[in-house]
Image (tube, rainbow, N blue to C red; front, side, top):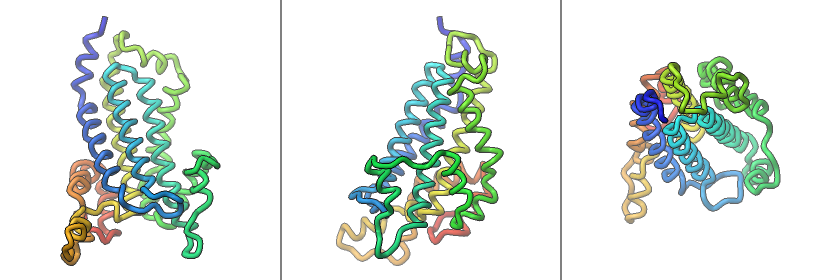
Amino acid sequence: MECKINEINKENKIFSELDYYIEFYDLFSFGTMPVVSPGIYSILNIDSYVYSSMQMSLDSIKHLLGLGRINDVYALVRKFYDSVIINIYYTIYIKDNIELNNFIVNKINNWYLGKEKLPSYEKMKKYIENSSYLMELNKIIDFDNRYNTIRKKCNDHVHYNTFDTMIKNDSRILDEHREKILDQLSYDLMNIIIFHLSYIFLLNQHYMSSSDYIDALECGLKPEEGTQYYVAPYIQEFFDKIIKPNRNDIAMLIIENTVMRIE
């Protein structure tokens, strides 16, 4: 017998937020697909595949959340967060190691080909924190407090570190704290996604581009001056809807350090 509280949970804002994130990563995957991936032997952009995978993880989170499987949801949140760290890490590593006379970065190319593993989470995290490309963002991102806390919470659910976390997977158990858990999940996912996109927008500014410039070329027209700096509408919407209201300091840092016409 399903508890009434689950019906209330399904009205929680997290469900509409997940719909929005799922659509965003779908657009982001499609938008980055034509861009050549530096440092590896790949015709299509590997980031496009990563973002598509992340989109599917969010879809799985939504499905499991509808069933009340909180432990399983947080296991997928950790997987999603790991995808974020991996994506940021290899993007920085390629920038650090690519050379004009040596376009292939073996470490990342071997990972892409399944020949080599990436470093541990802690090593990738430290590499990101020490990046010269991201000094200003690293100062304000609050990696140690905000994001280590989120990862610890995920690990508690994955490893059943307490009995209380273990029973969160059973939607038949009436839990007066379940609504608070969903609100916390909403906060955690929002922060992970802001974390991901803020780094990627600074590392790969062209990922914010609208299709205006390419569309003109494909139609045999000369693109208008400056259209290469136009920002895709869904990117600007994400800035206005998610980043600015919740981390305006990050939004301002990106705006001040990009040639793209993000507002």
